[in-house]
Length: 205
Image 1 (cartoon, rainbow, N blue to C red):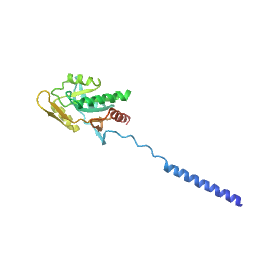
Image 2: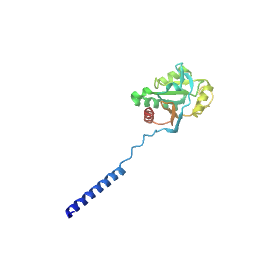
Image 3: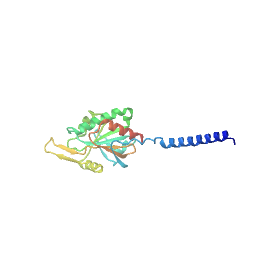
Image 4: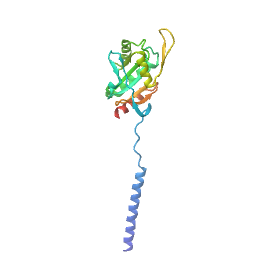
């Protein structure tokens, strides 16, 4: 082979090797697929079946958690005479539903009273309607409500005497996915955008 052909062959070989190295380096340096978005609430890992319950609704019908399969459920506990925490929570959840737009039709907020002595069905219905007419109130006997609280690890304690007593209670909100699984628990004080973000993820999965 002539010197010229040897030179051309050598250059071709260098080009092939260089191209192979470039492609290999490009594959190594390519960014990894982005990680799936994470819930902003404290996630249950692994998710677990949300304890089912049947309570008396503020509209007179039964409130059964399993009746809301196919929707994301935001489950919260409170009482209508609450001075700050409960109205703040409900106002935040109402804004979160508004942020979700059409997807809000697949979201159900359930408010379980921790004060059945004062929270009659009509009282709860009026109270919740001031935040969002789709919110469901749930009450029942003290025993039935205590059983639901126990299944979710919720505490409630009466404070004070007389008609103006308060109730100290767990203020976190439970996030349940459309398959009926308990997915996360959002602490009190988070913004509506945090709820909208997490609910949107639950509706996708």
